[in-house]
Amino acid sequence: MINVTNEGYGRASREDMGTVFGNDPAEASMKDGGKAWYTETFARFEVAAGSHEWLNRTCFVGNLLPPTEPNKVRVEIYEIV
Image 1 (cartoon, helix red, strand yellow):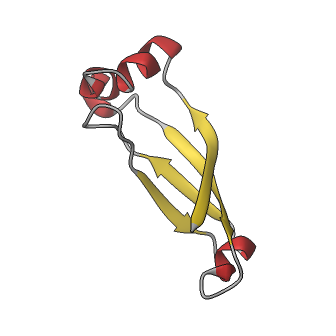
Image 2 (image 1 turned 120 degrees about the vertical axis):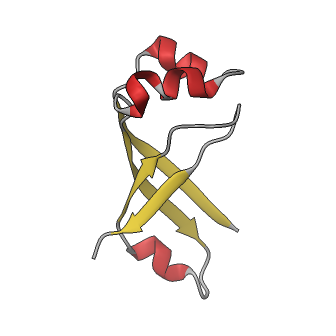
Image 3 (image 1 turned 30 degrees about the horizontal axis):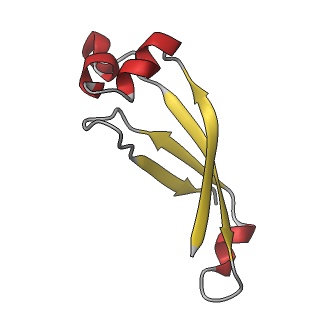
């Protein structure tokens, strides 16, 4: 099991975020052709000892992508090297 916590910053208003996680997420996330969408995260992993333990000792950043489906998110995560 891998636990992932993403904390970060974004430029969407509370109203837009309500729409993003509502029934029509594209309505808010694609305002201004998607140019206004900006949400960056700091991903933190918690993993038991074993083959994925390196995730506990590594720094990551991520991009919360503009949602395209209700109640679903996608985050691109990158290791800082």
